[in-house]
Image (cartoon, rainbow, N blue to C red; front, side, top):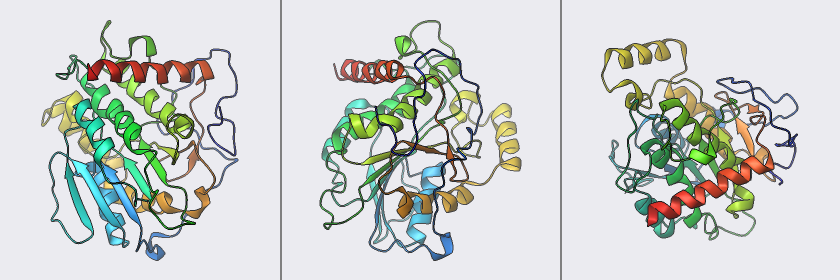
Length: 316
């Protein structure tokens, strides 16, 4: 496995329980430089944001627009006015059939970057989609895998010769040490919300680490935003409940805003420093972080095999 070109992502094959750190551990051996947002000129660049109608995806889409990019957002409900450089594609990606269709049919040949931010937290009681998939798994991870299976080989292929290799950025919580259970990938045994969510977290990190090998075409990177005030916790805490409002109030008080996050992330998406690299994870400050310890080759294979099997099951 060659998860990234400049540092080893999998150091030891012996099982080891990793420490959990919300924002990951800074990789002090790796520096990735970005252009200051005030000087960033994205005219002529094209960005796809899957999950771009709310939260961090919307903030990234808006910042890219302000910097001159052409942006296509995918989601269920469009909250912005369409413009010459902003396009909306409606899709309900809790349905994996819809995710597969989107991946196969979306015109992505002229795009430079695909950014996946759609996600929720698992509910206290297990929720299942009509296709038989735990709802957090379907939305927060497996839909991304399904979309990428259809579009990865076509992403950016119609751009002029000499264009940078296309990129995929996958939001989750890479490097935080969370472990899941690939043998219960659909959370059908002894359901616990955070255990179910851990499966999506590890799935997204594995996809960022080995996507270039398993779904070739673009390079892949993982994003760990940490705590930012968005709607992602509503499914777990209860939309509008006291717990939800209190938690979001605390997060908003101490964390950065979605707009601040967008200003930090958009220069990273297009920086020249990522040319020739893949499988790197980044924290909320766009700094490289180390991958989760214990993601051995065997563990990665388990998760990728579980992803394929669960997607086949959902498709009937």
